[in-house]
Length: 138
Image (cartoon, rainbow, N blue to C red; front, side):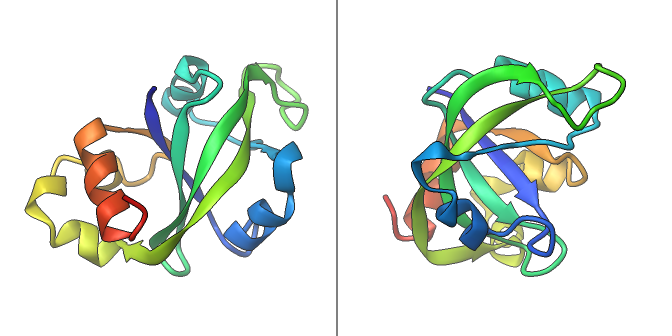
């Protein structure tokens, strides 16, 4: 299994909305960065990802699961970009803030810090385990 982090501004799509989508999940549309596209192309059904509230909150609040592989994004008129579908798996007992990630030496190389603007990014297994512990879902 691979691990990922999906960023969303809560005013555009919040964790509560993701949870409300239920088992059918939702398409992760609107990604227009080629590296983020490559990350989504590498995703497999069953991969897990952190759901991160960007701009407002700046915290990891939940865990999603990839439920469909990469496919065309109907919101992209150019046809260059695609999407995956994800469903909510669990809410973290305690959100893990960006400030906490920055203050944790073992997370210093995490893409959330080194590629901060990237909306879909990989998470190493050791980072995944640590953040799950910090968030109370280990």
